[in-house]
Amino acid sequence: MAAHPGARDSAEFAATAARARPATTHPHPATGKTPLVLSGATVVLPTGPVKNGQVVIEGPRITATAPDNAHVLDVKDHYLVPGFIDLHNHGGGGASFTSGTPEEILKGIHTHRIHGTTTLVASTVTGDMDFLAQRAGLLSELAEQGDIAGIHFEGPFISPCRKGAHSEALLRDPDPAEVRKLIDSARGQARMLTLATELPGGVDSVRLLAEHGVIAAIGHTDATYEQTVEAIDAGATVATHLFNAMPTLGHRTPGPIAALLEDERITVELINDGTHLHPAALQLAFHHARSQRVAFITDAMDAAGFGDGRYMLGPLEVEVSEGVARLAESGTIAGSTLTLDRAFKRAVTVDGLPVEDVVAAISANPARLLGMADRIGSLEPGKDADLVLLDHQFDLKGVMRRGEWVVDPQLG
Image 1 (cartoon, one colour):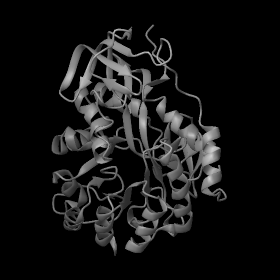
Image 2 (spheres, helix red, strand yellow):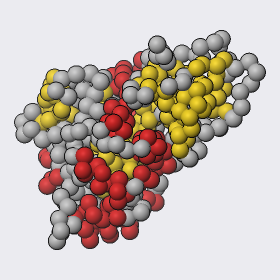
Image 3 (cartoon, helix red, strand yellow):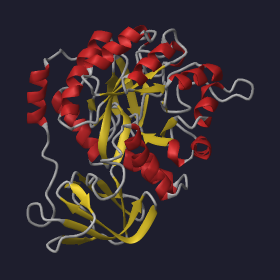
Image 4 (cartoon, one colour):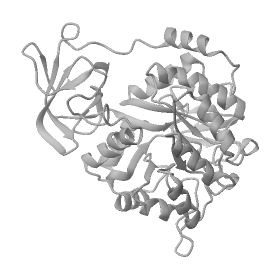
């Protein structure tokens, strides 16, 4: 796969994206837009699970009461949870959000939707500034059309000491003027930018991001504890994949992990795939940040939902073997092949987390961070009918987005 395809203007991109968008949704299992009642499931609400509950859907929204003509679908012995929200995702289905064509990007989005992710922020990786700005303009078309919830820039303003799967030759200090260039190129669709705040210009860039309503995320950082506290005080609110690509927790030099876990203003991203984190590290994060400050992410790259093989992550070649992505040259972990349905199941069945805590981490907290909690993130009347149907083994059995089935219910 080419790392950097040729530029195309926004109008062409929008037209191609409209043609490429897959027909993946289906009306309610009655006639047209007949209201639907999903009845008998354990419904996971912000107040906790409700057994033998129901969710009423009319058009694209959840409503409080069922009209007389509603179609009732019995989903007993299942869980109904809000649609998953991924804040940090580089691609899937063989497609890269950094370099793919419109057709490929939409395929990647669809790959994650059929695994329960009804809202997704498209993440880029380190690249040339002009290329990233051009790419942001193209991705903003998909955000404006509602296919993605915005853009996350991961790099180039990160530490060469903690570069992970980013090209060191393209890294740079976070000059606020260049940060502003990326924000402007996204035309109001920039949602988050990850940076190493200890670098020259880092704290000033955090302030700039906060002023423009863009999440400043601390990540790929070699910061000290004190430098991390300074960045939080300046307005940083997210820890990019906590524990990964940052100094380890030390008893004399606690580094960024301690500062990020202890501060109530920070939400910590966790990649719960069994590769990026030891279960004890995940438990440590939940113990200190509690479920209100954790966001499960995938950090997925092209191979998510696609398979083993060779891929490109920006300009770097990645080898995926047995579902684990590593740089071909160095063996460094290079994102993940995770989908959020797998992260959900692992959190409950392996990590032993209460289902309501997992829902908070995978839906409610990301919705709050994106400023979209009035529309998504919970199964409450008035919100979008974005939901996932799970069986009692927490395997995915259905996905609905805005009142339309993306994955038809499998109840047999």
